[in-house]
Image (cartoon, rainbow, N blue to C red):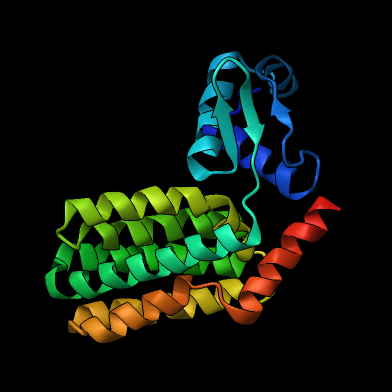
Length: 218
């Protein structure tokens, strides 16, 4: 039987947090988790580091790794910042993106559409990540790309859970198509506005996210 990879273990741990198996403040013990997943402690450490980077856990010196759920205000602020960073990336990429990168976005969108058809939210998210990473790179601004990637990693578990909402994958796919069209046309305003709305979690979308987290924790 093939052993789980660190990313697969991290996905499973995130799921446990959202389903309430792990709660805010719980310690993630390497030995216990290694036995549970049937792996050595090395992939467990790598998986825990992904949770730390995403902000879903924190590492305390000489104490270990503990679950850390951001509060509603912090979560809203992170999404608000991410939406503005994405908008900036879209605006710059519209002016600088290469034909090769546009082709990569089209290919990634085809894979996203296949995931929508299959109802595969996790598969869609993997391709969605590639879609956004291409746009970050095509800004031609390595500092902005780094900051976008950093905050993107922190929001991974929360953006993944959104794709399970009814109709969200199809809506996201439609937004992807508009974004690619705007980038191909060099329409910086449309690219920025669509990416901002694509990522923003405001109003009812924010209440739905908080409700999803609360229901998972019950």
